[in-house]
Length: 256
Image (cartoon, rainbow, N blue to C red; front, side, top):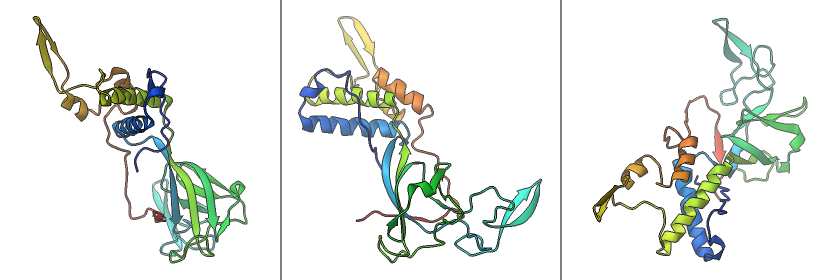
């Protein structure tokens, strides 16, 4: 999805406010993209608009919404049992919930049948489940994807997905943006070059190869790299994901 809602801190960058706005924008885009990727593509709150297929359980002796089965299997003391879905007799789960691709930071709006749902009638559990509260409220069993929102028979959720960007990471992005801006102006900067060793007047200096830094998702700037290693010590490329045929279906609205 790319970095979202990164408001970098440039307090340590002398002369940042005097830079052209276009260069500030370019340097910010460079720094946020590099550090977003280097820290595992996990930070930043992006707005997501989805249309869930329907609720997980029905309260009328039905099972999962996609096959209308009657029973839900569960294990207790090492023995398999069957349980009626939604009645709360043998499972610890809400009566009415829908799955949202997470992590869900906050829910901005829920449209049901074209009307805004009262925020006091739902909550988010485990950063993925949108639970309808109250005994008289519930999400629909399914929705008609052939209809555009808003319309009767539709359900749409707008929410912020992701994790807030740590303050230290925003400061590191400001430092990296500052050095990038200096490089663009032909000024001396701290971005590493591809020179691995140099000898002058009998003094030899060996520097870390930039390719080695890139493979480790590092920049060569000490205070920036310390933040990267602290937030992503194992150099992961992204969040761990799992896939299962049992996962609920959620349709993401991409256009318009």
